[in-house]
Image (tube, rainbow, N blue to C red; front, side):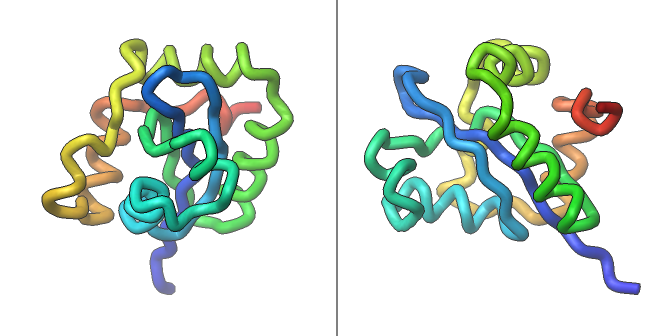
Length: 122
């Protein structure tokens, strides 16, 4: 059986005034689209292009469920989730412009740095 890769993610702008929650099967491509202004109008309108949180899934249904759950949360709860895994709100894709990361690199980074998400247990 073929492995599948899906990602739920959150992006923000420089001043953190807005958050966008999304889901994709190619995180590097999707972040590049946000940065180039090719993504949806909400993200482009608020210049949302800094990846501050993401989680990997094998099943598309799980990624969609995570995205929907996050979209239902109040802003403060999303902020808390980001702060747990990325307390300085760094752009996790800051160095991706030169070379897109491979899927294995993303998974390894998530396991080492981000760790297990609290969303899987809810």
